[in-house]
Structure formats: structure tokens, C-alpha cells
Length: 349
Ligand code: SAM
Ligand code: SF4
Image 1 (cartoon, helix red, strand yellow):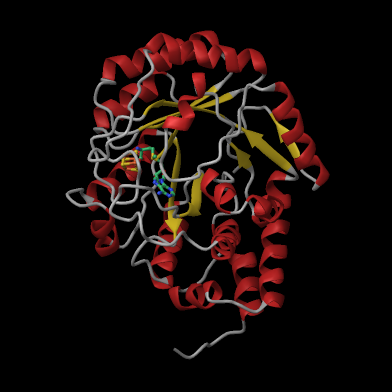
Image 2 (image 1 turned 60 degrees about the horizontal axis):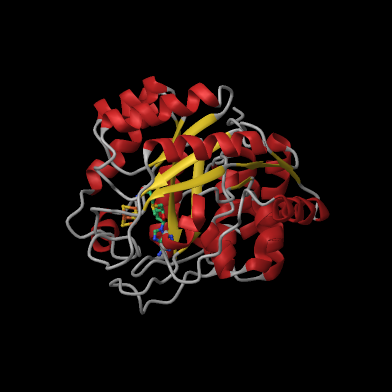
């Protein structure tokens, strides 16, 4: 394909207007020349500073159940996988948030597999219970696909945010990754969440089997259209006993470039430094922060339940209730010019 523009010209255009065609994005993603990459990262860094300064928001992650009825080919929690399963009770989840709140956390992310044991009423009670004892904290749900009525009930109970990655905007790729699942419903759930009024999070993995640069460009264009408040982008990581266990992990450098382009396309987005990226390449932290990551999610799951929440092999866990480890993390982040903040950290628009 003929390249119509120079890479810096496309980046400048993205920086000014956040407009780019699929061809231009593919060109950017294919950039291998170090010089150009540095320019892209610099522009993303400028944009991030313009909106969020040097803030890095902290969210307490509670992985409350690893039961899952879904069959995502890449994930260690998929229903066919034989792993030790666990579930936290309503009280355990609320208590854990209270402990996190007393530690200083002002946002909790409740994440699980698709687990119908948590009925609408149970989840409403959990969200309301957290809001009662952690009054000024935000609650984020990341529990997969539910009906509009359920999403509305969680919102009415006080849930503020919802993370649901589209995983792939391209239907063929999505169907490949998710046997028996419904692409249309995934995208429609995202639009419903936005309509209800949640701060909504989308995202995808980089380097999943059969994904092309064109597919990534399609996801980027979808996110530019959807303008989510949060965007999770991390490399695919292989997981034992899944259909994709023998696949190679996604490329950390490409993930970094995708993060930087996303920062330019959706400038206000809150973008976590994903555990997958840090697990793949711990030394990338500083560059990921500069490329636009502005959220970190230490783990608050009790009794290291987090270690059983094994989406993929060699998953790293930041223990979020350990004073020393958190102080060390804050220091490390300060050393590279950023400021770790335990605040609600709402989206700035
Ligand atoms: N079950 C809910 C869902 O799928 O939306 C929330 C939890 S799910 C574990 C959260 C995210 O983990 C998914 O959206 C997926 O992108 C990511 N994930 C799962 N398996 C992964 C893997 N092998 N490598 C990298 N990320 C993975
Ligand atoms: Fe279940 Fe989410 Fe993993 Fe899919 S990605 S198997 S829905 S936990």
C-alpha cells in the first residue's frame, strides 16, 4: 500500500484534530523507525500532561470470583478450564472495600468472570453496601455482559463506572476468539452502558491470534467514535490449558505505540497500565506512563485470591494493602516524574 503521508505529519494531524483514516493508523502502527516512535510518544506525553498533568490514579482491584460461564479462547478462567474456583460473599466484598477505604482508596474495581451466582439483587446489595460505608468512593464493575435492566439496577444502586472491553470490533476476529458468543451483543452492551450514564470503559488486547494491524486500526476507530471514558489496552498473554496456550504473547513495543495513538485519538481517556503489559515487560512502566497510561490498579483481593484469578501465566500482582510495597511503588513513580494519587479520579472532559 502506498504511504500518502509522512509519519510525523499523521501524528501532528492526530494531535491537532484526533482525525485519522484507517490507512493512516495502519501506517502509524507499522512504524518501526525509532525516531518516529519517539516523536509519537512525545506527542502522547504532551496530550496526557495537558489534561491530566502528572497524575496517576490508583484503583483498588477486587477480583471477587473466578467462576465463568464464558468460553473466551484466550482466558484462563474460561468455563472449560479446570482450575480451583473461588467466590467472595457479599459481606467479604464490602468488608474488603472498607479495609481499602481506610487505607486511602477512593475507587474500587470489582471484577469477576461471568458468574450468574451474583444475581441482580446480590450485586445491587453489594454496590449499595459499599456506597454506604465508603461514601465518597467510586465503584467500578467489570463483570461482563448483563441485561439493560440489570445494568440500570446496578447504576441506580450507586455504581459509577463499568469496564467492558469490546475485545475486537471486527466481527470475524471476535467470533474467532469467542466461540458461541455474540459480537453484536458485546457492542450493544457498551452502547447501553453509555446511555445509562456510566463512565464506560472499552478496550482490547494487542497481539491476539489472527489479529492484523488493520484489525487494531478498526478498534482504534471504534474507540474514537465511542469516546469511552476508560480504555484498557494490554498485550495478549498465553494461558495454560486454553485453546491459545501455544500462541506467542503480544508485542510490548506495539502495545506502547497503540497506547500512544489512543491517547491522541481519545485524549480524555483514563487508561490503566495493564497488569498484562507489566507482566510481559516490567521495565516498560515508565514509557507506558509517558505514552499515556494514567491509572494503576493494585490488588485488594483477600488472601491472595488474586493469585487464583489467573487469566494468563506469570501474571504479576501488586499487593495494594501492603504499606511498604505501596510506598515503594509511589516512590518509583515519583522518580520518573509522576504522582500517584489515591483519589476518585473521575474522567476530565
Ligand atoms: N469477565 C469480564 C469480561 O470479560 O469482561 C471481566 C473480567 S476479564 C478477565 C477482563 C479482561 O481480561 C478481558 O476483557 C480480557 O481482555 C482480559 N484478558 C483475559 N485473558 C487474557 C489474556 N490471556 N491475556 C491478556 N488479557 C486477558
Ligand atoms: Fe470469562 Fe472474562 Fe475470561 Fe472471558 S475474559 S473467560 S468472560 S473472565
